[in-house]
Image 1 (tube, rainbow, N blue to C red):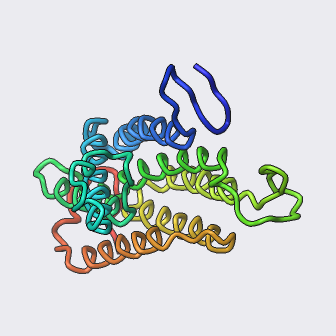
Image 2 (image 1 turned 30 degrees about the horizontal axis):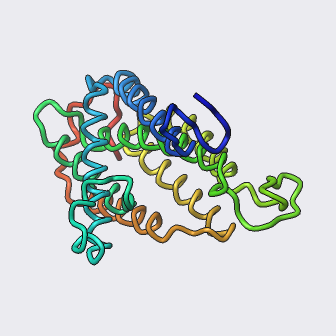
Image 3 (image 1 turned 120 degrees about the vertical axis):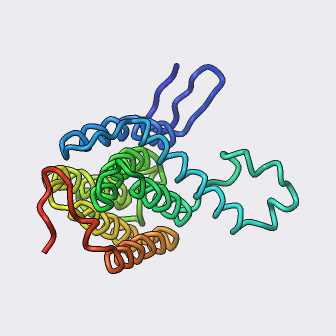
Length: 244
C-alpha cells in the first residue's frame, strides 16, 4: 500500500484521499452518532446511522440521475455505477430529511428535534473528514493568493479554502457537542456552520449552488415542521428542557 497526500494506492485500486477520508468519516460519524444519542439519553445505535446513510445516498443518486437524465436514458445501466457521476447535494439532504421524518414517527423514537440534532452531529463529522480530504488535494484551494497562510500548489500559492472550512467545522463540532441538551440548537448551529463554509467557498471563488440550495431546503423543511408540529409532541423526552 502506498500513501501520499493526494491518492492512496491499495494493490491495483487507486483512490482519491478525499474519498478515503470521507469513508473514514462515515465510520467515525456512526460512533459519534451512537455516543451522542447515549449522552442525550436515547437508545440509538450505529445501525440507525447506516440506515440514514443508505437513505441519503439513494436520495442523492436519484436526484443526480434526474438532473442528468439525457445521459442515463442513453446508458441506463450506469445508474447503478455510483462512481460514474456522483451524488447531488439536494438529494442527500432530502434523503436524510426523509429518514429523519420516518424514524421520528415510530413509537419508540426520540422527539423529532432530538433526531435531527443527532443526524446533524453525524453529518457534520462526516463533512469535516471530507473537507480534510479536500484540503489535501487541489480541490481544496481557492484563487492565487499572496496571503501569509497561502498554500503551495504546483508553482503558485493559493488560498487554503478547504483548510479554512476545516477550522470552522471543527470548532462548530465542539460547540455542537455541548449544546445537545437544547433541542434544535445543534441543527441550527450546524446549518449556520455549513452556510459559513459555503460562504468561504463563495469568497474564494468556488461557490456551490447545489450546496446552498440543499441548505435552504433543509431550513425550509425544519421551519415548516416546527410550525405545524403539535405541542403534544414535545412531551416526554428525558434530559431535555421544554421549548419556550
